[in-house]
Length: 412
Ligand code: DLL
Image: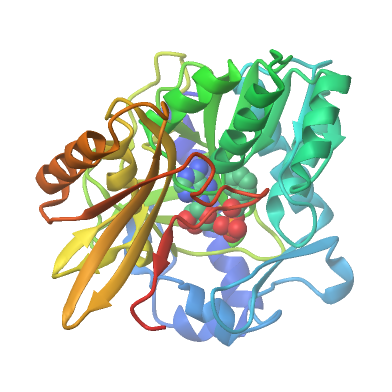
């Protein structure tokens, strides 16, 4: 769709969403008081941000704009502390969500009639059921495995021969490692991986290890779940489902809009949601967007991979360090496997960062590799780090879900 036509639809839908919130969500009636209705998409910036804390403060259903009996489903994400955030869907919300995920899967090159091994967790987490519904909507067969039990996953992949898989990138690596130990090839052609940050270098490792095309799928439960955006098979950025979700990139400090191409916080407004519409939701995820048409012909805005979250950031001796920066540098060094963990400790008054990792070849010179890594980290991060080269299999693997690569022992 040409962008001017898309923007006309977006504005109409934005106006409907603002009205719905004013009429039906008491918190928003109060917050939006005195702010005129938007007459252009630029007027979006006159509205306040909605933050995760607003969801927690209104736990469980305070921001829903339908009655309880109109809800078809709820999901929830476990926060790091305290109450989970709860999100709700009407039947129509579910249909739109599934359509978005169906677009992701088809864009990734998955054909109707193929089978999708779905190793995202089923349950309150949106990954399993989101991908499940999308695959069914696209005519793709689903093997609803859920996360965990790696041996059973391998057997099912061997016996059922699915063409596609979806799981977190860290779990794709775990599966690849075990499949390699079994020594056979596999039937997989496409992996639809997301729910946690991963770098281009990690993509190359996964594609080589599993012999698949690996595409990046993004989403968050507060917005809908997986399927807010996804790469197509040509992997030229994550195409945002912009007829349903309006993206903005803003300065993390000031909240002011940033030009296309600059990295800032992704803020999303839902355009068609009924049960739980969101106006300017502050995702905390850092990325950039472009509105240039994609080489594949799509005109919707595309976002870069998430480079980090403000709350993933480690401050080591005053220097900001993102796990994805470490991943990028580490995986560009020869002889290092893609498994790593960052351990932060406080020694006296000084914070130290140790990178635990493994070599690919047990006969290689561990000291030389460690020195190489420390040197590369020093120039990319700007701080000295310790490097611990460990036996294969020592660094924690994903056991089915999201993998936290950071262990912060400073406050233990
Ligand atoms: O992780 C939804 C999802 C499921 C996405 C399956 C993709 C595949 P939440 O549990 O609410 O929802 O976590 C959302 O995960 O704000 C990001 O920080 C992170 N995240 C999700 N996808 C990606 C990605 C699901 N592709 C939070 N790259 C988001 C980097 C991602 N981070």
